Amino acid sequence: MARSPSRIHYPPALQDALAWLGAPPADDRLLDLSPMRKHLAAVAALGIPPLQHIKILELFEARAKLASASIKPLLLDATLPIPKRLRIIAHGLMRVHRRIATGYLKALREAPPEKFKGRARTPSRVCAAGLESLQQEFEVAQFVSATPAADFWIQAEGLYRMAVNRADKAATEAIDRMKILLALAAGQPEGFSPREVAFLAAYLRRHAGAVEIRPAAAAAGEDDYWLDAIHGFAPTATVRRRATTPGALHFRCADMSRVAREHLARLARGERPESLGMPGDALSADYRDVLTRAAEHWESPRTRKTNRRRHGYRVQVCTNLGRLWQRSGQEQALPEVELAASEWMVLNESASGYAIMHVAGALAGLVAGSAIGLRQDADKPWNICIVRWARSDNPEHIELGLELVAPQAEAVRIARRGADGQAEPLPALLLPPIAAIKRGEALLTARGQFVPGPFTLLNESSGRLQIAECAASHLQLHTACIEIFEFERTRVPY
Image (cartoon, rainbow, N blue to C red; front, side):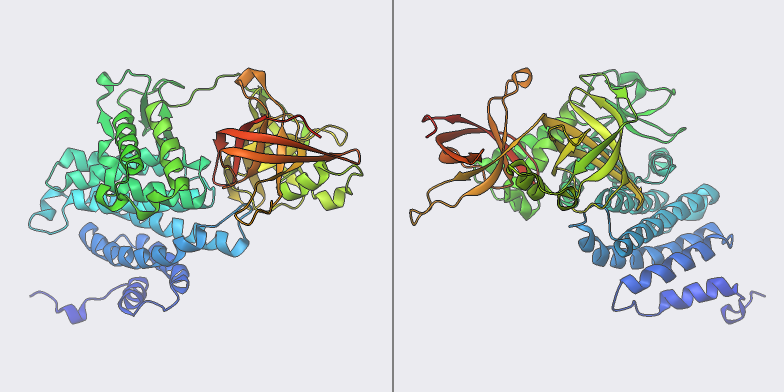
């Protein structure tokens, strides 16, 4: 005779987990994070039969989605170094999503296919759920400039191949989830701010179907990427390195780029983003720039144009652009304590930039796209650099990739006539012309200051004020934080 359900004995850890899952979620979703991690770890260690494990994981998945909806908005304005509490929360959420995905993959590998017959959640749907959890983990990692776990891409490819091999009706959902991950990684999200990553992820949820996953035999183009499930390498552009293992997963984002550019063109013609299946934020120039930059990466993966030389010397970095502007404009240099420069180690360098690692000193407000100053010695001018990527897997370790935009800069002000006839001077850094990149004189300003047309350049040095009438020509570079635009002097300084 079958035992009555009321007499089934569950291990205490499972009883505790089920009791917690059966209780209403906490009003503050942050309070759910710690017990969720604890119960997920306890359930994973019990060796529960696969189908039962999947059912339990579905309950955890629902609670994890609630937690994500509350926590992810807190990370959208995160800058390096990430505050301790926010870092703990972000990494806790990443681990929750990782345990759910790992649990799904383990259960699918252990469950005989015939056990799923007649069930609403097919193996491919379970794969799709696992890939969605990995996508959440990947997004949160990008928000805080962290690196996903070492086996992240092994897990992702395992779930993807399992869905493709079983090829039931829901396989398309799992494949689309994998395409979202691949396109997001190929778009180089480490170069975007958290809000920009969130926008790009929202866009890809609707349009990543344009990504083409290709058989290895057909993948020989310079615009291909590949994924190594054996070693767990992140997506790598073929133009930078050929696949090292047979059977590697190859994909191509050229069609994804074409779709993005078509959407940008239609937005420029006045179409509403909602009609294109795009987030409403797509009307913002900042977010259209995000899509433009991602489309460039998808269409033509970047290669290194110059050799990188490994180094190990120290440099000073000033991350406060306002302080750097003040110092550049002072005849009497400000004390070093006011400049608040931090110490960094140069890991490698090239003619176009640096990779550096934080060593000592306070810093705040670092985000991809911000401008910083870098110099080797106190008597050397400040190089002006743009943060192209940032990594920080723990509070004591921060690495930056920098693009050198000028070997030095001069503090100036620019003024334009307002509607009331009054000119409002704004701080800017005057960058010298650089023939190698065919750039003339340029100005670096905060984001949103570029306006084509006339302006007045005010330059005070050696106790003298020089005034020049100028005309802004075109925007040479812009990020979420700054703009660099070229200009011409239309009248001799006086």
